[in-house]
Length: 453
Image 1: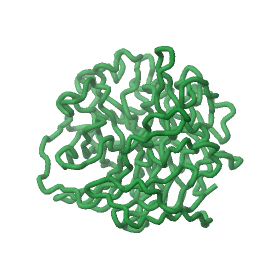
Image 2: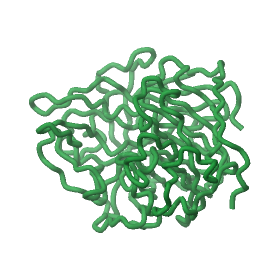
Image 3: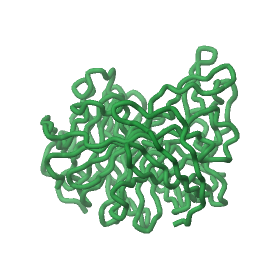
């Protein structure tokens, strides 16, 4: 079901302070549904930040109760809409001030019970949703909210899918275990085609999900060997089996669509646990997968080398703190990649035509040892990772929010960023009512002195 929502935002102030906690009025209405060249260059990461780069605008989401956008929720525990910065999309036909955003799987946290931490889902009936938003007057206004649904129109949850593959889910206090849901999605990356349908990146499987304009899941593409029997939509096991070795909660995160809409690109947030978790301490190579969105046919696979954690963010504790959270396709072979820790983020430009195409090679074979992820010197092993050129270091811009996850191209001189506030999840009082931590979702526009090529 699709819900169009208009928010009255008078008096909302964003810069420099977050918006007032006063809840906006809501008016709900119904709307109509609308082969690669041989590698030639080693990895290069120039450490020059353009001094003319600056924040030119910022907008914040005002307090919005979850039940105001998804009335079917039985008890939202006072939690406000959040997590909408999982990705950001702006297509060539969209109005200059409008973007598409997506929530993640919904409010989730951790509770310690009997000295063990448990993954909690305070609102287990929350449906991940796609949002169309307006940026004006220092505020983010919701224009449409499209909860995701299955083939029969029933809402899709954000609950974990498979025993032994996903975390167990528990109620808000960690006391009661929730059932696994093979239809559940941990939605992250988002693109929208000119025909109005969507593609979404999912962290659970990991998977790529084709979604109709009204939010119905059309097909979910998962790694070979995973069984999603019982899912409330078609599932195709067509992705490399190796991808099932994703680091838990670190599956597909960023998604991009080429300007000609012939290629979809998906990036794993972190290196695969390949051959196992022992590689995490040193692994710096994650993977970008390219496929034809019309057929689902795989077209390419490339190694992306993450920066050394200590040089990138002095506050980071270990290499797994490095993540990829966003992708934008500037041309069919050139991408912008959002690399980050929770505190520091940078955007790099990469060129697929200058990197090794790994698709169908020994590096996709689980039996290959050492694995791609275990390589410390990939070039000596015949693998040229994507050459990187720094576009912007967001740490150089005062006021950038933490945990930047969304990236969109506004024009050749302007990038848009969105943070994930994790639904401002704090604690719960004795009545089970949420006590937020005060972090808000924002969209920040950043100008670049030199135009992107």
